[in-house]
Image: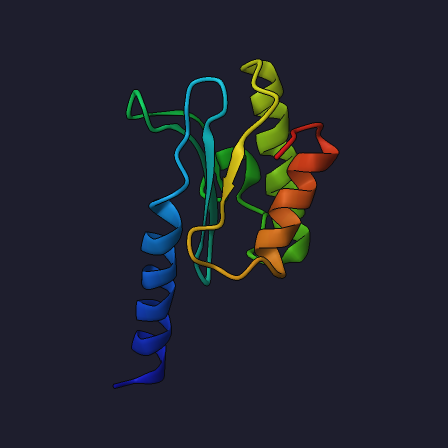
Amino acid sequence: MDKIKEKNIKRLQRKRHVRKRISGTAERPRMSVFKSNKNLSVQIIDDVAGRTLVSVSSLEKDITDVKPNIAGGEKIGQIIGERLKEAKINTVVFDRNGYLYHGVVKAIADGARKAGIEF
């Protein structure tokens, strides 16, 4: 099996394992992070109601200059933090989506913390 496929399968296994225990509610929604080689995306999800409350992506017109690196991750984290404050949400459950809590994923979390969001 090719190395990239194997790595992706392992990530999906970690994702399923963690998602058994993590769930978002209206009071404390789930902050789900997705990264690819070209883009970053963060969604705030209420799993009970089954809807996305707030989202931010590097594909949006305002922030297309954001790269999928640590600096870009921190900027995305700050933007999602500001949008959460506007929606009057102060605490979230962090879902790293099977990615290691390192580099870009950690930068997104740190950016949201700087904006005043608690995990």
